[in-house]
Amino acid sequence: MKHFYVFPGQGAQYTGMGKDLYDTNPEVRAMMERANEILGFRLTDIMFEGSAEELKQTKVTQPAVFLHSVAMAMALGVEPSAVAGHSLGEFSALVVAGALSFEEGLKLVSKRALAMQACCEQQPGGMAAILSLTDEQVEQLCAEVDGVVVAANYNCPGQLVISGEKSAIEAACLKAKEAGARRALPLPVGGAFHSPLMEPAREELARAIAEASFRAPRCPIYQNVDAEPHTDPETIQKNLIAQLTAPVRWTQIVRRMVEDGVEQVTELGPGTVLQGLVKKIAPTLPVESKWNLD
Image (cartoon, rainbow, N blue to C red; front, side, top):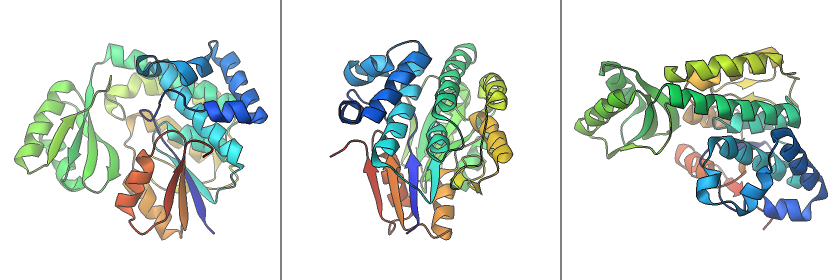
């Protein structure tokens, strides 16, 4: 059976995430304690007992989601036919597939989080979800707006997230409603992720990614920037560098997986967001989410 594993991005975190894995699996517990050492603070304490506000800190959120996802894969002993991750989740996918070591993956995720936070402070921006228009309609209305606003997350048919300057986001939302969008909803995020405004963060992260050791993964990884399956380490590295300013092509990834014969999809990590998106993109495809040992 072609069993594909997918990994969520930022926003899926919750208090208590990963505690059952820590308490019952010695190998996972050792990995989580190693993460605390690498980060220089006890991430697990915030994951298990922190408030929603504490978990929303960028330096916490991204490593927490990454750690939970990798721990879930370790606990289940997964051997995927292929992997993919939504934005941050691509780093989880790379580690589970063996293209990056856990330690290097965690360090890159931490640097990514801090670089993105600094970029948000230097270049304020925003994002908005546009519902019930086609991708082409949203792309066109973004092109008609003055200022920086681009398609950022192709989540599923009829759900595309745009990203850019706040004034341009507002103008695009107005155009979307005029075009018949059911919702044009600004999102509670700190910056314009996956847009040209993330260029300073991309440059900073690019240096760290260039220094990391990438290996050929045990299975293909479908990457965000082109929705294609890759196994060449240099190509994977190049695509990962481009990811911060390029759109997340999730709709295209799932469609390509279906073309390639996927028979089962399992989401590993907090939440069920990707399970819901997969159901909307490929309604007949068996899909499940695993975030605990129940």
